[in-house]
Length: 160
Image (tube, rainbow, N blue to C red):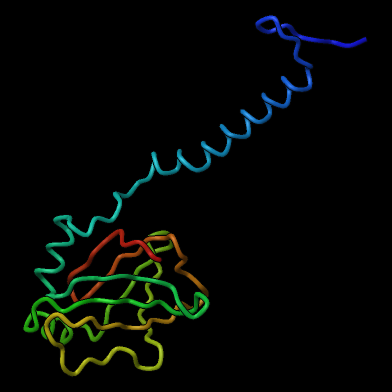
């Protein structure tokens, strides 16, 4: 005996209807996993044009270019550009290099790799980098960090 369901004059096998329902539920599940966490995020997204970014740049004389994992995740490449040589030199007198704080665990990473923290002369419009050790792979790609330079900080910076 064959069980058919009539829809708009067409007979559909119950298995086809069941498969369609399963596919729809799978699509809704994936959407919930991907979309909902972003809707309920506790922190605002990083905006390089925000007032917080402008305040960090005005205080330090430095523009953050990027924070990215490298060395199979064991190193963090922090790139920054000098906007104001005088302020940048003052900042580097206070703190010899950027420090990162993982916003998920609140762990501070400040140990440089192979001395990548010394910048005897900083020049305007030049991009510099610091390599920090990511011991225990605390910071992960897709996470966010707070960048600390002396007494200035910039929150919610994405890690690439």
